[in-house]
Structures are given as structure tokens and as C-alpha cells.
Image 1 (cartoon, rainbow, N blue to C red):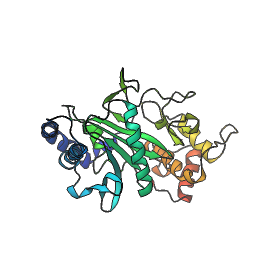
Image 2: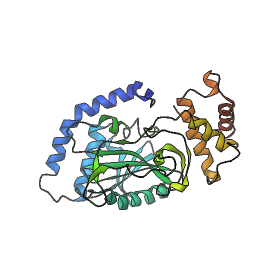
Image 3: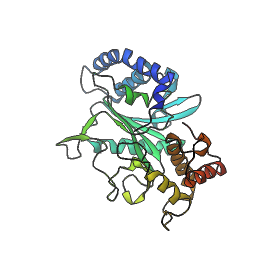
Image 4: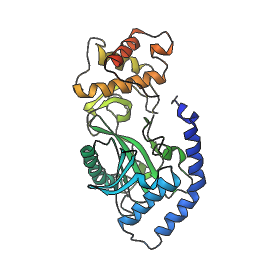
Length: 297
């Protein structure tokens, strides 16, 4: 099962309550902003402002508009968390419509050393994490939904955005690229051997090239795969069945170590947690210490 300990946080409870209290007013205000039809990009920016500062817990000063080439930069205490590329309302109808804006946001994010990007047209909000050169879905939300998408919005709140999302929250549908059928955003692209999406691998070189996806350690539902996790750790640190994993750049190893370490922590397999564990987890903890990697739970 997916670890839901974050739901025990007081910040989680207060954020969810805030979303529920303010969502209906947001829906009314959004409809008012869109009442004429054919609205400009500025209207979508205003809707995003309403979402982050009135529904969620960000302050007005946390959203920087037209910062450099970025439409919106979401920051707190001088730390930049999210680059948002904004398009006029009604732009996103198919998954392909997201590709250009996300590509733009990614270039701006790389220039500013930001690891999360988003695209929004005033109705759909898509957010992804930049991970080892690829993108991992975080959320896709339909802002016109009368029911507040509380769980999805938590992951872009002040207290949720910096946490590792255990699985993508895809609570909206876009048309397929051909425009004739409705389908979830992140379906259909699985590793040909493991039948898993990119989000289930500890290293993703290119989200569009499954040959660069290394070390599967999650199940398709997003929960930790207790059988594959130790194999992934052993393949990274030593040899698994005589074959050491290749294709992972040296500079990416610390990120992969941390990702596998956090998975082991969720599973209660870190030796310092007081449990008896197999040698592979002891080697992992040693590698984390040697690389001065702190685990966040």
C-alpha cells in the first residue's frame, strides 16, 4: 500500500479544510472571469492567482509574474519551487497541446535551477517533477470540477509541493492526441519489458525513451515493490546476478540513492530504524552516509 503518513500532518488537515471551504467561491469567481469567452492569457493568470492564494496557502507575494522569460514563478523565502507556463483559456484539449508549454517551462526551469514545472490554461493545471533528465507526472487537475480535488491540490500547496509525491494524481481527462477519444493523461506509455510507467523507475534518462529507464522499484499503482526494491539497490551498489546496472550518469547517482533510500525508509528497512534487515539495506545506509545524503520522510 502507498504510505499515507503525510495525511497525519497538521498542515495536511488544515490545507484540505481550506480547499473545501474556498473551492465553491473559486468556481464562481472563475466562471465570472470566463463569462465573455475568448479571454486572454491574463485571465488564466488571474485564475492561477486565485487558486494559489485564495484556495491554497500561498501569499500574494509568492507568485512572481513575468519573472525573466517565465510567466509565473512560485517561490517562498527566496526559494523557487515551480515555473508555470500560462496559455489563454481553452488552449488545452489534447495531451499534445501540453508539449509546447511544458517544453518552454522546462527550459526556463533549467536556467533557474527549478525542479518542478507546470502549464495551465485556466482550466487544466498540469504539474511535473524534473527527474534525472526526464519528467514525472505530479498532478493533472480540472479547475472547472465542482468537486474540490483536495488530494491533488495538496501536492501543490505550500506544505506539499516540496515533498516527494508517492504517485501521480491524475484527476482530469484530456483528449488523446488524435482528438477523438478521452483518456487519462499518463496512460499508454509503459516500459515494454516491465509494463510500468516512468514514475516506477529510480532513474529516468528521457521520459520519452523507455530504454533510459533504470531500476524499477515501484508497482504500477505507485506503491513500493518490496521484491524489486532490494534488487534495484543491489544492482546500483554492487552486482545483481552478476550484472551491474549501466547507463546512469555518475552525477545522477546521489539522486538515485536518495530515491531508493526514501523508499526503504517508507518500507521500514533502514537499519537505524531498529529493525533487522538484509545486508543490502545495510550497504544502502552506508552509501547514504558516505555521500552525506539525508532522507526526508
